[in-house]
Amino acid sequence: MMIRNAKRRAALLAVAGAAILGLGLSGCAGGGGGNDSSSSEGRTLRVWAGSQTPIEANFNPFSPTVLHAALGPIYEPLFFYNKTADDAPSPMLGESFEYNEDGTVITVKLKDGVKWSDGEDFSAEDAAFTFNYEPNHRDGLVSAEAPDDTTLVLTYSTPQYTNEFQILGTTWILPEHIWKDVDDYSTFTDEDPVGTGPYVVENVTDASYTVVANENFRDEGVPAIKKVQYIGIDANQSAQDLLTAGKLDWTGMFVPNPESVTDKGVISMINTPQDPTVLYTCSNAELGCTGPQTDVAVRQALNVAIDRGTIKEKAFVGLTGDISPAFTLMPRDAKWLADPANETSPQSPDAAAAGEILEAAGYTKGGDGFYGKDGTPIELSLISVDGWTDYNDAAKLIAEEAAEAGIKVTASTVQWQEFSDARQTGQYQLIMGGVIGTSVADPFQIYKDWFTGESTSQVGEEVPTGRWNFSRYDNPVVNEAVAAAAATNDEAVKKEAYAKVQTEIVRDLPYIPLVINATQTFYNSKDFTGWPTEDDLYAFPPAWGSVAAGYILQHLEPVK
Image (cartoon, rainbow, N blue to C red; front, side, top):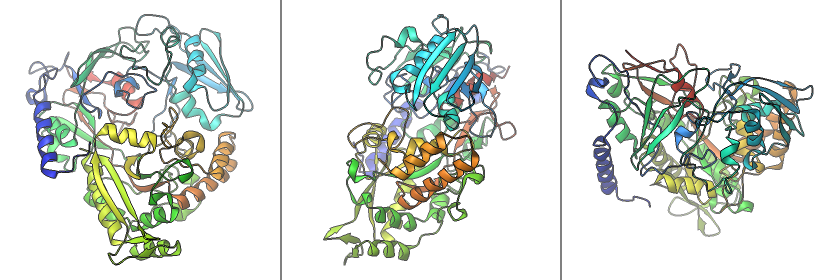
């Protein structure tokens, strides 16, 4: 339910923060230290990864409400791709892989001697089962076979060079002896998950859940951090209070005054802008979207009405990066940008240009200063998640800026579940949200997962598992170009395909780009070592990072 009363909202946040600070958190917070004054050994690592309360036990990696510890700490893909660098993938369950001559067959050599967390042996049969499992059987997969215990052979109908990251880096490997009996993967909550990752579930409560070191973890050895507690928090401010009080050790969140958290010398901060922050628009009327935002002219007008410079400074206190409407991460992806004019979205507002766009599309400005057509005003609803202070502030600024251009936008906040349901089913007009940046120096995965017709569905139906086209955008030119890029290892052919994609999405704006988000990670560098740093950014550092969070936990050690 939306909280519309500001005083009531403030009171609720205060109560929530007090309740969280009163939780029986594992470990001791004295001075940011551990269970005694000289050692952090044995102390629980306390994490906020964004889970809201009440926490519900759900470790199903196919679920949109999966708990964060499932994705990396418990379940793993075959290889780890570091999205902060253009590096070769690191082995996880896989040791190596190779393509056949035309890219239609990937042969993966798997690690030997790996066990599932319940003690059962892991083999290539589990990996083959995983890829043949319904939600993973895609991209033209012909067969997934296990000719022996440590070899997986994936055969596709078309070349898969460009799909490498999705296939090898985002497919969660499942234990066949558990999942073969799951009748409906979409409703299975997987409360007692069996994975190959470094941790297993110990317990789940409404307020937190705890994972402990997997004693069957493979050749890397049992993690040095024996227990990790994920704490449910409903607002950024509450999490910031816990950080300042020494009751959180690791989180990825926005803090407008980070020095207030780091000045005691216990918590350190690193900022790694990687992921686009955008306005989701339910854009496709043919797929059931309703509202003025289904008109491309309205989206174009809103795009030029936004003052990104002000949003960067006021909502994100100068910590964000400039965004490209082509969704290339600059300068990393510079070679894939077809038109230099699309390097950066406009930073200053242009109300006059917005008006020209609308008037050319048949809209007229009424006596109240707002545009409409055929007696119907443009009225747009913009939602963001209650407690996400940076996004909430940005939404308010967007509403003010749109009004200056004669576009009426009403910004409001909703609870996380309402936000998740709205974007999954397409029952919204505008949403402040994020796009998952690619883990390789190539925008292909964004184009495929966020902009193609195969990655969306009719309004009222959830988007396909593992895909993210919440805007319901479906453009045949984009679909064909993405398919062409997926089927080649020729850089020139890919550039030609990407140029077509960029022309369409820059014009159509199913997601209106805002900024490259300030991805601040706060971590306890006094009691724990092994964190990614600016000098050694071996993984994307926030606690909510899929795959990367489990990879980081393997590297951490308590200060002795």
